[in-house]
Length: 149
Image (cartoon, rainbow, N blue to C red; front, side, top):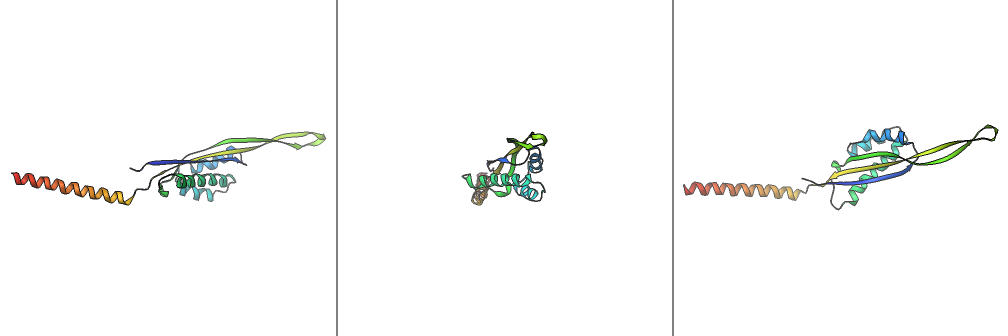
């Protein structure tokens, strides 16, 4: 059985509120990366670009940084969550010389993907060769027992 490998990406300081970004993240939670990319490319929300960037970054990290070759068809989004980032305090001028405060809220996006190692064809051929060898040895044992009788 193929072993599962993990990689992650962390997108910080996205200029979108966590509540809005989490809606987009929930669209692709627990999906294959190929499906998630198609969904995010066709999602008409501003946060979709940032989530897409994080998913593609995690996918690239898994394919490039793992020591073994990963099958791209098996890569899934294992975890994705959005947390609140830094808040910038700003002021808007108001009447009579006042200043009204407001905050610019940002988000942090964490994506972890999981993929399985490619099964080598040589090992599959080797297993079939081992099976046929064991089958032929079993036949030889049965033949030898018949001859003894």
